Length: 122
Length: 112
Image 1: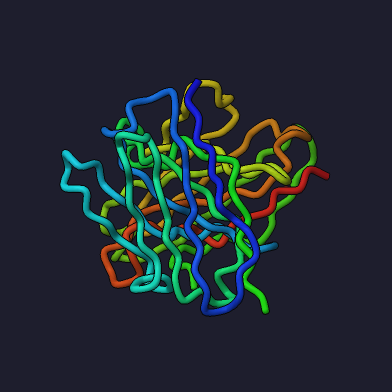
Image 2: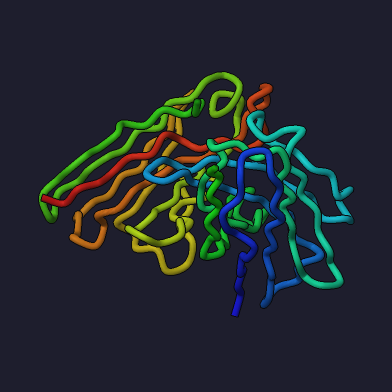
């Protein structure tokens, strides 16, 4: 079964750091481009960033609100995606989803995890 | 903040047809990037509904259809059913400083 399982969410103070993980199974993770998408409470979806597969260069791209503070990385030996979040702000409070980017589906986000909640509050 | 604009809400009676618009610009939809649509049922993760402007993944009913023209795209739901009550988001890509992936503002579909 194709599955993504996020973990690592929790409560953190403004200015703090947190690392989210996303464990992948049921597909060839090393070949996949991956993205993080977040959703603030009661709000819409917001794309956070993306990492290409290593064979495609492994480069990353980020949304303007998180650029310079968040870092996406991957460990293909562990089938795991990471999101390192530094200098957290209250506006980063959200459910964070990891997704696959399917080029068979024209670059759509076709597999989603269940999400992990991050709360930034003093 | 989103560069893709959707109506906040649409509603219809069971069996009716509703459409949701997604308006972008020359740096995203108008630049030729594909549009994808997602359905988010209450309390759940989003699910891919339409990809590549008008294609349905396996298992998505043919009541859902998508189209794209110029700087806009649309999602149509025909034969509206109670289980279609959800939030719907369009998504594309943007060549401007706003970033690689962009979502629409989201539309709440209510079945009357």
